[in-house]
Length: 192
Image (cartoon, rainbow, N blue to C red; front, side, top):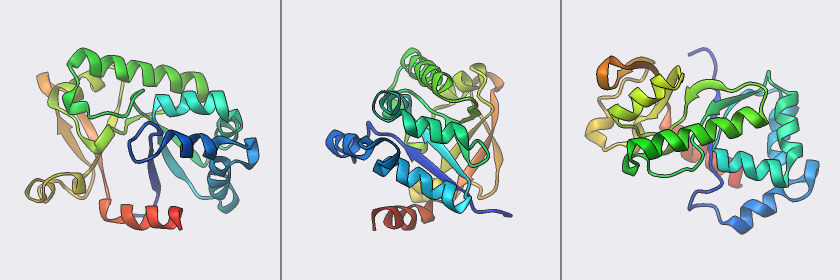
């Protein structure tokens, strides 16, 4: 590994963040807590891969367009990952529902950002073989996985280095494994 890079799965519609707290983080334009967090990456010249759901992007467009401008002003630091519109349990979605959620997320991202990397950051880091095929068919070029999100016996079988993951009907995409054991330390640093 030559560089440690933050990959932030940011979904404002998740159950762990109240709507009140999220909207408060957007208040204040350039001085908002959300812009301040983004500004830390700019101030320190640190790269980050941001996985903002479409619903999060829509909120930013409505309540804190300054954050979108900041991200677009620094493409050398902020890499935007492909995300669904809504952060849900993708394993419970029908194929049509998954495809629609993906399309809406991509549409929001294309409207807000100059460039979106065609690597998909799945909700809860889980996908079915059929969803992998739908992603490949939609132009997605790779996915991420966090072995810590799986049962221990399954997680131990997931490689620690990039590999190719297979879906239905011969679909195959590169997969980048994340170092899940760093998640708690990262969140503690943000919260404290």
